[in-house]
Length: 161
Image (cartoon, rainbow, N blue to C red; front, side, top):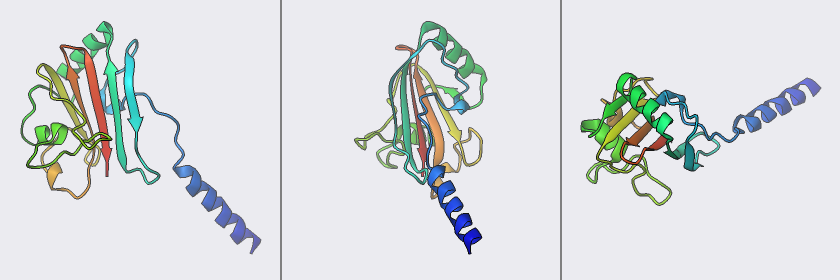
């Protein structure tokens, strides 16, 4: 009986600690971007204990980091020059007729539409940059980002449902 209670308490401790994660200000690794001298202007994480939620970053890139990101965007999987189209546009920016997938705390679209730069999408369920078929699912787990080349600002959001 003592072993059973000990095992049950150990399991309870593991489950309690499973939701404990430290602060994560760094950008998602799927972006392929490493910040060396940039400023995170805004970061928040509304993931709950079960892992569902949204996380957001707004980063003002240094000239060096902006140049590195533009180089990455031209060669890495998931990055595309703006404008976005098709399912990519709907998932990253939303559309009134489809709704908005990535939203801020106020319920409005999280990522701004910009004229010049790049957009990024990575589907965590299929581990690929493909947007085809994502809209037909019952749950969404993806990272999306928009880089504004005019202001050297990176906006990034993660959605887990």
